[in-house]
Length: 494
Image (tube, helix red, strand yellow):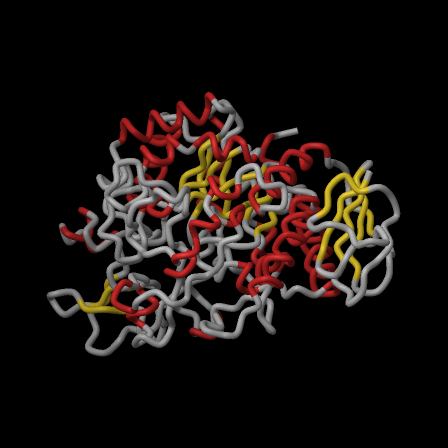
């Protein structure tokens, strides 16, 4: 079986992972020093958020040069050493590729090569498209013409009707594949092709049929290389069947499953998402992926401790009351559910420490463009990007950590059997033994239970403890005195 079909992948937001030179910003040196942490957790691959030179108007997703490394993070030679070090530990490297837009500091934009962007010469706004970060999706050039940016004004959208753009990205793919990267996570994968003839209500800048030809070309390129290199899509699409089209056997290998991430902590809702995900992937023969948090969403320890346990960009619930103890208990059960499902699983850095969303950052330190473009009403995504605590000796960081995070550091949790970190280590060690198709079991209302091969997973979302149909090999919390599985807990049997 290809490695990516059931891979465990760890997401590194490089700026906030590990600081190797003491300047308060995570870097490649820090990641190289901490690779053993990821190896000991049992992960097959690392997905890195953008590491390219960038003015950081949007956390690095505004790329100024696709063939180099942001100097704050290190050098191209450092990246090549990281790839080699990771491979020596049996860990693959997946890098972020941002093909929908670049930085306004990219040479093409600075040199006024406007045919490579969407530029319009009109008196009024060319249309009523809105930026996903708030406000109009058009801004003016110095000559008075308009250019399109579906995100921040510093992120002009590429014009994929121009063959030069196609050639450029095919060359970028080869540049990194030649340096040994094992795959690409494709940002805004649904957004490259725009249809300006269609009304705004049709979302003419998302999921247009023309995008598929792009990915067929890319698939041919990655297939030329040995080592099972992959393409992973980021698409927020409401239609599971259209989502699956990206995963046909001549396009991408896998894509993020945001329905699962957004799902509330509810047995019926979770089962529906699992069933619909498996059903959508089955016709194209692609493995699903499962993810609880990432660099864009409220950390799930916080979400699961709230009255509304799902996630929505329209309402991030900043400041809503949170029961941290409850959220942590549910997060422990959730990773056991997630890791037991068939397919790949992604873990966002800090999940394994039980970190929560930091919502009380000083406003003057917030960098997310959502905060600025919303007129300082949406606090954005900085709260899930606070640097990780490694030990009590950590120095200052570019976003301040809560004072008590040292109690949740890697050094503080290592060797403590009840800690979140040790649970994650056990989960991903045992995960390698779970294989086979999913078969649901009926253990009562609000209890999720299924078999895969010789393993059974039970997650109790009911209001009372439940009996287990076998002997547990791992539980998210201790069983009660009667040997029953408590509420908001999970067990693996077999």
